[in-house]
Image (cartoon, rainbow, N blue to C red):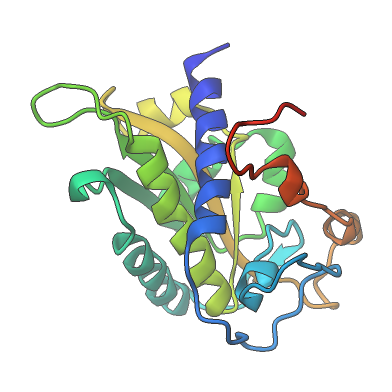
Length: 229
């Protein structure tokens, strides 16, 4: 298994952990309804069910408007907790229509380019995997996952869709943006808005409408010893 694949699997686990663990207000944001019915087994803030990783995206905001909202996403990420407040996360982004977007978009695998092209921005997520003295920083992926979870939830409060993806060429990103080895390339996030009926893509819409269930708590949370599946 390659290092990038191992890193992606760890980051996915981290992101799921963070989304369950973060505390948000129980109010509803903007009457946003998910693309399919989501039902929680226990009472949680509506925001967790409203957050979606949609494929059927569109760009409605101007570059300036989206740029301002992107900064709000990073501000939310900035306040995430981290071990000893090391804050190992870094973000590289590009707004659609700029050269930075083109550089990022070219690293996305063809299958994902089909829907990512409708997004308004792309973000590459990095984590610093070593301390300043060169020693390993074991919590770098976990901490960065917490920051990204806050970014995703902030996007939902703003009426945006933030869709994390791993289908891009990590080595190309490292070379194109001259990223040193002390930074792990964790993931990419596409930022857009839910497509209206006028701009909807039928195949993407059908993909979004699929019921995506979550494992029951009995399979993920154990009082005492870990139980095998």
